[in-house]
Image 1: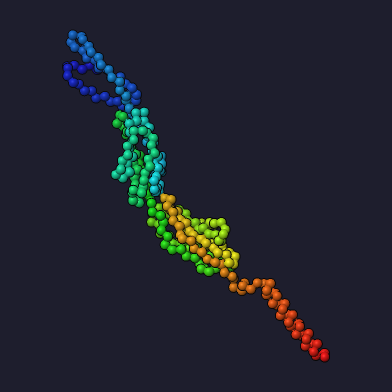
Image 2: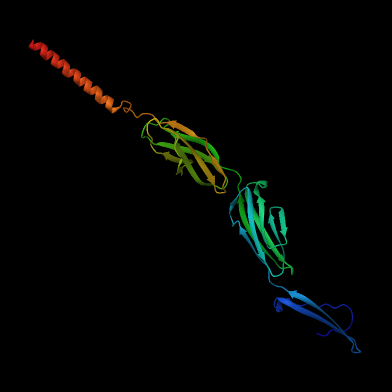
Length: 268
């Protein structure tokens, strides 16, 4: 390219017509006497946007407490990346980062996570997801069981009312044991507005303790206080069988003895 006349000059270079990589720009100036001067510079053509990814959490994830956000970016001419959460922005000069986000400083709700990566040529890329902050555990409203005083070989129905306005209940478990034994567990099911479960029938005089535990989708947990009951004797089962047999034998013996006595007396 030849430009006449002296003074500052400008040239609009369409770098899109050139492959990414190193290029040498050479300037040559000549006067009318044939004298020349040269100057060269090395530049890097970069028309490729960076790559960026929020590796964790995934979109629509429930988060709570101190949560780790894993970020990754890459570019041959990487400059920086920025993470924006609400009004807060964190900047890094390295392309791989793990950010400890204290969600307790934020209220429960939906928050966008916006990652922007830049290269030295001014190219950028934006990645965005939304997560749901939930730091509020489920609220136990009531724990009930029927019957209150079960008898031997009678099952007990446990019912718990739980209030959860955040991420929702993920699982509910009933824990129970006979006093002195290991804890056992059974999943609870939602029936209407109550979570219910049945404790199997137990032997007479057994003391049963139990409680219910709930987890929401963010990992918050709540559990009831322990309830307990003592298994009573079943109706009609309070008199042992061997005693009943003994009484029958005594009565029968008395009858036979009386009959023998009157029979002997009659003969005399």
